[in-house]
Image 1 (tube, rainbow over the protein chains, first blue to last red):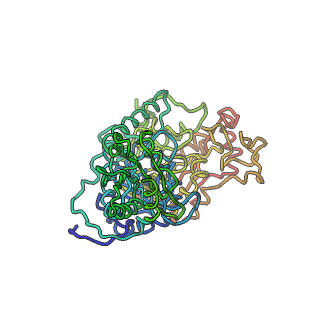
Image 2 (spheres, rainbow over the protein chains, first blue to last red; image 1 turned 60 degrees about the vertical axis):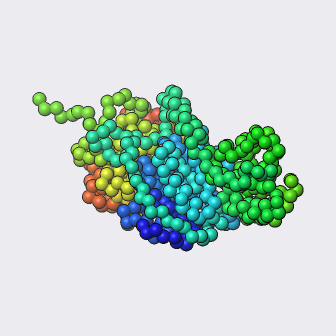
Image 3 (cartoon, each protein chain N blue to C red; image 1 turned 180 degrees about the horizontal axis):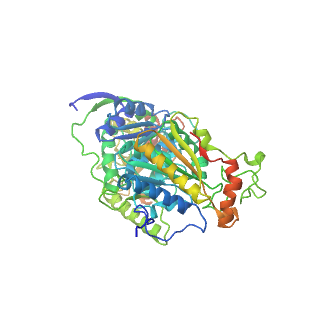
Length: 348
Length: 242
């Protein structure tokens, strides 16, 4: 690929990032606001790869299960109602320890909701979402460039930990266009996976499953997952911090919400207000490191395009040691700069 | 003296978990014999269902994947598309293939996926305690149709094989039975044909196997075979459907 900078929407950037990362299987079902992603995959995926428009999100996630079991890098994408339908499959993927990348370009809910951007699937994404004790790694890009970059990271993390990785964006990120610096590095896609289903020539048969009936076997399998999650918690925290050394009040926001927070911060700092930002990039594991718990005077303002979901993780991180305020809107409403500035001024 | 009957290489030497008189053991063996005879064990990938045959991979000596209830053909579609040189088949019961997974079944067939399907029809949900299945016969008593299947309340036995035969992507459908040694041999020929079709890239093949469930039919193993012949085969006639 040439060293180029091209204009892409967030949806297209994720698709291009996936192709760049060696994703050779994509299955999806149309839903707004992520349709550019499925269309881009249909158009640009290599002839050697497999693109399937599935009959439903249920079929799409289970196709991705099959492709991953067969040993290739596989991805599906959808938006909130479709991601709800995929929860069964994601639980099976987690239980079978399959590396899969799932993209959720969130829209308003509950139910059919609307097609406006939202962040209200945070709980579903970070708490597992389906049945059973499991997690997906959840990454939240804040720009189109980052959507492109993190998609590539997602495939590596999925393979490294044999875990589903979810890219959690919203309708604004999916639809907005920005220049993207394309990467020229070549990925070692589809590195050898000894557990994959390829036919048992010259080896014992491989079984991909999440079913453990023998007494004690499921507990063992769960403990294996938990040990994996513990390593991920230690090693895979990702965040961006701004002005954390002098900030008296720290805004905590991810994705599109963090962009709006940044605009508010630059206005507030131009009039001397000591405001900083913690932008979690990994939502699971939720970053603990940027929270300076020693300075009791620091206050946090959690901003969401939802009604207090990430707020719970901030409360867990802070553990009651510092004051936390909240501003959130959803269902198509997005907290704007003015509302953020007013709220900050009230707290200060 | 020549040994004419032996264990298949594609079957492990393990005790069965199936009930006395259950058809799954025979069907598992037929699949294994076909895989051995076609010399495809090292490139076969089986998809086990959710249902009594959920641990089919504990019997089959080749690569296998689990699939969520009803989703076997979505999983199989992807595996076959990724590895077109491998032989991929699903093994599914009536609840799996014709109730919860109807959508996946119809669309995989309609895409003409080059897959082989072994469809076990025993007219009841076995693993969960003998509830009404899509294929339960009118009048047949189950734990959720206590007075027998009644058309107004439960609809009719679903003839998914006949429905699938309408689709241009489907190359072969045959209904067979395990009620007697003669029919078992015919069943094996049908399974072999479904696998050969895949080897020859002919598209979607399905073999529906009428199979006994003495436990939830409330019959002895022998009576169950008679019931397949005398009752079930009247509703589900044997033979080539497509």
